[in-house]
Amino acid sequence: MLCLLSSAWGLSTPSALQTTIPGQPQSHTVSSVEWVNPLQVDGFCELGGWGCHTAPQELPLLVFLPGMDGSLLTPFMQYPELGSRFELACMQHVGGLASRSSFDDLVADCVDFVASRTSASRRVVLVGESFGATLALGVLDRVSQDKRPVGVVLVNPATSYARSILSTVGPACASLPQPVYSLSLLLLAALVFEPAQAPAFIMLILALRQPALLASPAREAYLGRVALSALMGLGTGPQFRIGPLLKPSIISPSDLAFRLSAWLETGAAIVAPTISSMQTPVLLVAGQRDRLLPSVDEAERLSSLMPASVNRGTVIVPCAGHASALGTQIDLTAEISAAFAPELGFQMANAESKPEAGARPPIGAPNEPSGVSAAWANGLIPRTYDSLPVLEYWEWNRGGKRCPVPSA
Image (spheres, one colour):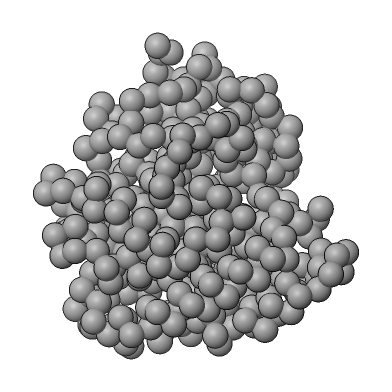
């Protein structure tokens, strides 16, 4: 949904994935989607994490299926920590917002990719957000038993579309002429944003706190590159290649109408009969204050329908709205590692005291005062070092003088 919001406001290391950068010529492909690792595009590197793995192609593969707009921005704070344990493969639509691929075509292309990457020696985890969660369920239903992912994470699943305010407001907005259409998107923006996030944003801007997930110079520099190039459009050049990849785009009324009908409505109807027969372990994640979709209710509904043997629990992200469930308050890597540890072969630090998936409190400072603002601050921790100068942001990724991996 980030493309809606933007319209309302008017390195290279060896990898098993071929990365692509929007705006550059792409080779012809019969697939309706392509796959990219945002950390690879950014040239991100940190000791013990992505960019320093000796054999990244041997890591488990995390396949991310984005929401209806195809934006890869919403989970960007999760990427560095995920990259410490997984190789990332994030889906992009070859046709961009103009794509007219059917839901069945998208499922088929995703099934082909997952099957091509799954082997006896390499495990795959599927993460779907919003419409991507619906798409993930379609993939699970069609992929063969021997190529099935070892686990799936459903974030604010859009299987609830028919019961959501989006199913009423969305088509109404798409039917409006310009410029009324652009103004109407402010209503959708109000449903996507959660006002309680303001204190956390202010503390980040003022450098009073830092995200617990990004509490290192290399990760803070990554956050700065994303903020400058993707959100503010200021950074250019090879050190800011992450910008074009994550930058939100404007969606037209016809594109919005198509996706609401052909993807959200049709997709939810197609996967509905498959829930009760699921065979893949499932972890559910829901934003407590999602107003665009009834995500908490939907998580409860899906939990009641799926076999108990595959249900690995539900994580309710406090005070999170539709676009912030994968923000600062959840450590998705830790949740996945706990939920699917047996399937992934991960060894927990203390197996006897390992918490169940979703049982951990939100990440961050343990002694925060109660209240909505404190809940949003929970993903932020006091700074342990001075904030980086802006000019250092492009010194920490590949090609920069502070990158731990020498340039080729």
